[in-house]
Length: 184
Image 1: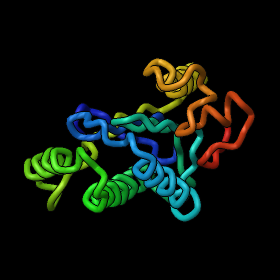
Image 2 (image 1 turned 90 degrees about the horizontal axis):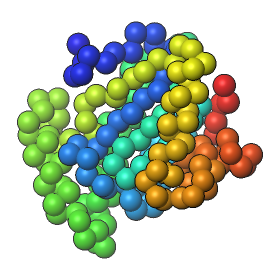
Image 3 (image 1 turned 180 degrees about the vertical axis):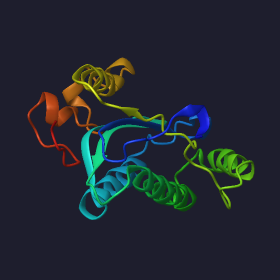
Image 4 (image 1 turned 90 degrees about the vertical axis):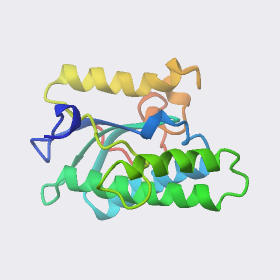
């Protein structure tokens, strides 16, 4: 059973997913790292059957309300997404001569990778995803509000619709955010 006892039983149901950077390192604070996550979500929508219903990138974790089309498995999609974004962000840190935090972040990711037999070098994301199936309107509404209120509670923005790296733009400003949303 996955760490923490969380498991995706219905691979095509709508789920609230959270995954965090190892040691809760505040790495996803630079635009280029956020863009890797955004572009990866777009790729998965276009090529891997991902349906994004809501999303929010925070400095050290990512919240998603997602599902996938029937011929795909949500667990496989998440595994591939995490593997790809891990490699891309690690590479971006290594290549960024202006990244003042690079050495200590890479050290933390390397140490985490050494203790996990599933990794060759680095571990960027924690293993678990904390999936919560949104099996009722109450659960969905609760998770949707939590996700969009995250940047407000963190003091990054004044209102949910003002945070660029979330679907708040779509839900609260009737605009079009960075990632295509399937409203539910």
